[in-house]
Amino acid sequence: MTMFQDANRKQISNRRKTDLVLHLLFIVATSIGIVALMALLISIMMDGLSRLNWDLFTNYPSRLASKAGMKSAVVGSIYMVLIMAPISFILGVGAAIYLEEYAKKNAITRFIQLNISTLAGVPSIVYGILGLTIFVRGMALERSLLSGSLTMTLLVLPIIIVSAQEAIRAVPRARRDASFALGATKWQTVARSVLPSSISGILTGVILALSRAIGETAPLVMIGALTFVAFLPESIMDQFTVMPIQIFNWVSRPQVAFHELAAAGIIVLLAMLILMNISAIILRNKYQKNV
Amino acid sequence: MQVNVSKPETKMSFTNKQMNVADKVVPILLFLCAAVSILTTIGIVYTLFSETISFFKSVPIFDFIFGGKWSPLIEPKSFGIWPLLSGTFLITLIAILVAVPIGLASAIYLSEYAPERVRKIVKPVLEVLAGVPTIVYGYFALTFVTPLLKSIFPDMSVFNALSAGLVVGIMIIPMVSSLSEDAMSAVPKSLRHGAYALGATRFEVALKIVVPAAFSGIVSSAVLAFSRAIGETMIVSVAAGSTPNLTLNPLESIQTMTAYIVQVSLGDTPHGSVEYGTIFAVGLTLFIITFLLNILALYVARRFREEY
Image 1: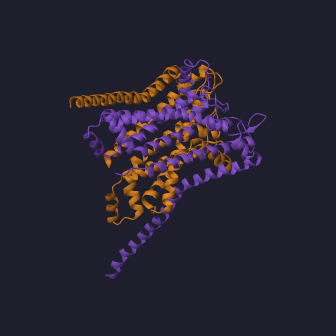
Image 2: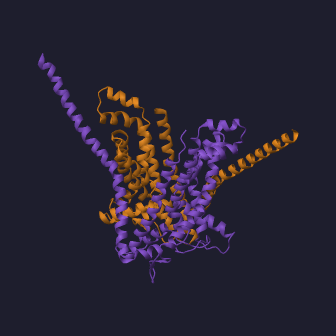
Image 3: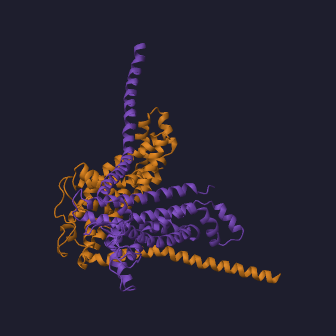
């Protein structure tokens, strides 16, 4: 009897030890991701802070690292987002409203939905190939700001549609019923009841999607955004560059001075992303209070 | 009297007519918005296939699929996709070896061990990793990870698969951890309580109850991460090099499919040339592989889901 109890007790203590060891192991594994993020941020700060000054925003790219700035890239990124925002908002929200409020539950709707989720998994560089063929060559828009913005719109559209769908779905059924009970038509209900109650959720998704577009490099390399732009685009048909492309160009050079510039550029890019994410979080909190 | 009654009626029917117009036109407009996504897919498939077919008119498809040498820009030209495929899979393999164990362990920690307070902070922090632009990771791989590795492997080349693969792995950790954690959190509390009541430790509950119950979600997250690693472009363009190299040595410089596409589009390759066609043939290969993986992830998540 005691032998059995001893064996039993030993087994239990072994199992507890395994649990403890693995608990520690899991904590270590979880902190690897966090440590990597810290290492990334700290190394970029250390490399780039010394080059972070106004010259970065007022100078054009240059062959001399000491004179180079990213004025055209910052402006290009902002212009691209300004062009993308209305187009992707209208197309994305329109598609989401259609799928949530109008579409019949049939094979075509299921196909569209499946199609959207597969599009979200297509590598971004494939969108670049699409943009190169359709916009740059097919529609002869050349390597313009418009080509770049349209390509990026297609890239972020699945993200916007899915998040807008979630926001619309979160509107309680009762609000629609109340509107119908007052004699409103479908469209009046959607435009005056459903959209106003979901708009902050929709905007959150749009801002996050646009912040994805700001950091995206590969598709714009494909459609031929330039790496050396010493002018500001004056119309949507002008050539352009964006921040990630400028950073890519600086990273690709062997000189350390250009790497420091790249790090400074990355700080600016990350600051912009953090700003957009904070505004998205503020909107989301407002939205959670409303519904 | 009768006139007075009918007057508002005609006015009513007039507004109804206006409403009817809006309610007839709007659904069509909205459907057109939704159709853009279908057109995008058609555009991608049509573009890739039509250009690839014309590429195969000048380069035999057999050479492309079975050739072991890729040098389309330098004479003597050869168009075997295998060096690019091996480069891509080498990167992906390293990335998966980093991301799946770490991601899965993080998911188990967050879902089974961590106090709610810790979970609420750590999960979003890990998700930040997925929001960092890939060019930033490229910089990190080249200027931080590579020098670090070089102190361990002194004869490693500056551009190498190991550094890029590790960083791609870090990038996709949150894909595995977040999606797996979601799947684990969806396992009903009653199952855990049953096991605890039988005297199981937390690790036993995690390993024998939660992981099996959430297995379809975990596998599907790993497959999605795999597909994401294959399509990753900037990290490998910056840090892995541009030498199509049929090797499995992670210390050598290689080239992935995506990095090749970037390399060609950075140069001024004339439109319509055979070199230009390679973009589409490689792009199509990339698209087919990632598409199949994404469908597989969807299928696994749906087909093998445990319903409670």
